[in-house]
Image (cartoon, rainbow, N blue to C red):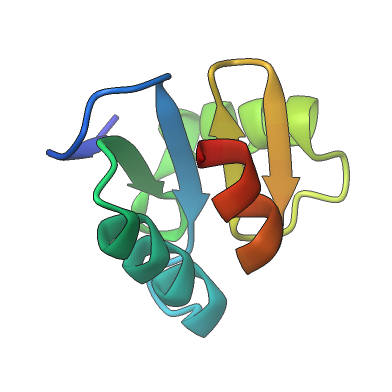
Length: 92
């Protein structure tokens, strides 16, 4: 899978499942960059075939609605949608 890495301040692993055309996904990425944290992201809509299905299945485990953005922090906490205050609190 084409997971992209963004360097920043080390902390718990952060994985963002996003759509390349989604404004809320773009705002979430911008927020993470403004916070200066290290994170990985994956544009699910740019995947094909079994890779895409695998990514969707992973998102559904964390967020049964399979909505985007889906942010997974430290493989423990999931934040679905653009929730600026919740993201800031989780990463403080």
